[in-house]
Amino acid sequence: MKNKKANTVVFIVCGTIVNLLMALLIIVILFIAVSRIALIVGEQKAALLIPLAIIGGIIISMIIYQRLTAWVIERFGLADKLDPLFVSSKRKKKRLE
Image: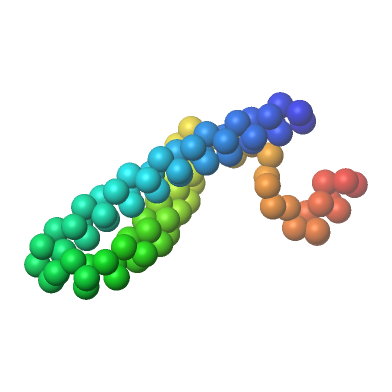
């Protein structure tokens, strides 16, 4: 039982690091796109896109992270090696019995 919890913690920590790096990469890519747009429409209009680039980068990385996590769990058969994070109250009662 402890091993599953340790595996889950390691998986979450590694996933969080990957998610942060992915978010930074996507935000940089979107900043480059905004700088290219600034050449066309002007710097003042393009400056309005900077907050959208940051928020968009975070949202895109979260979506990719969810899909990547599901793929890794399925691909390497990790479902039985990880402790479920969110267990419904009905399921908890069944596990305790």
